[in-house]
Length: 156
Image 1 (spheres, rainbow, N blue to C red):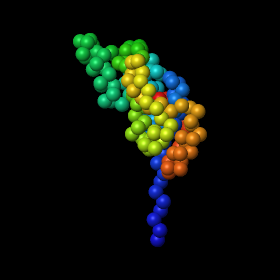
Image 2: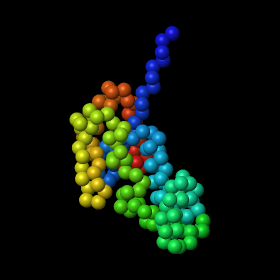
Image 3: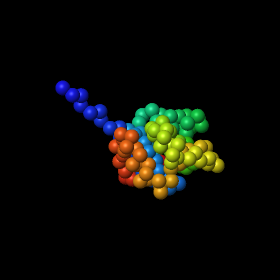
Image 4: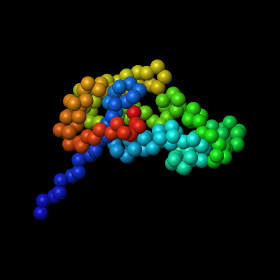
């Protein structure tokens, strides 16, 4: 009896709206970051925000915004404003996946097509020019990855 083939690892990709670079992530991480973006951007009230967020993330945010400031936590019906989420307006929250790509991409892909960029505010990140997309995707597929475009998800 022959062993069944190992499933190919999956990477989602999209083009970052912030810098036009390619972003690669595991499906789980891309979906997690997408859910955080949607919770912050779509919530109209603090109750809706709480319901949309993972409990630990919500606790961390309200602790910083309210508890550390000595203010009462908002009631569920209180209007929610995304600008109060620490780091959201600066691009530091939800996490920026271009800063994490070295942990999911093979080193030879990074060495051949990636470049480390320094930003004025957010530090260093790994940038892949969108023009390299066909060659990067082909190289990943040759390395055994299944590569899926997911512009419908908000991760960058």
